Length: 155
Image (tube, rainbow, N blue to C red; front, side):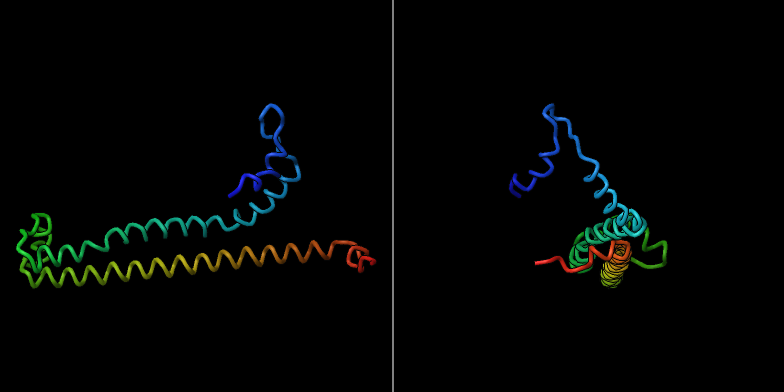
């Protein structure tokens, strides 16, 4: 972005360097911000879905590592995995580990798909709500204007 894009904001600064933003700019910013704040719950949900999606994306290589290292390879199964398998009644045989890796891979994929769908739906609902609110406010504003404003300007 070029520095000239900041010219309107820079014109509002005083000689001493303190940012003296005029009242109209603040009012416009507050008006726009109100549309976002009305959807704050949806925006918080989007942030939570994004963080969870990042966590599940970090888990994606784990089932493949389990499959290659323990199911198909000769690595020793960690004691924590072995004790967890014994606690639910399974042994740490290669066949069980392959099945566990496949199940974990499907679970991680399904969780990522569900989080992606939830994020998309929340974005769509929030965005559509903001656009509808803005269109309604604009329509009511135009209706409050004088009829002379709507008359064709001479030429």
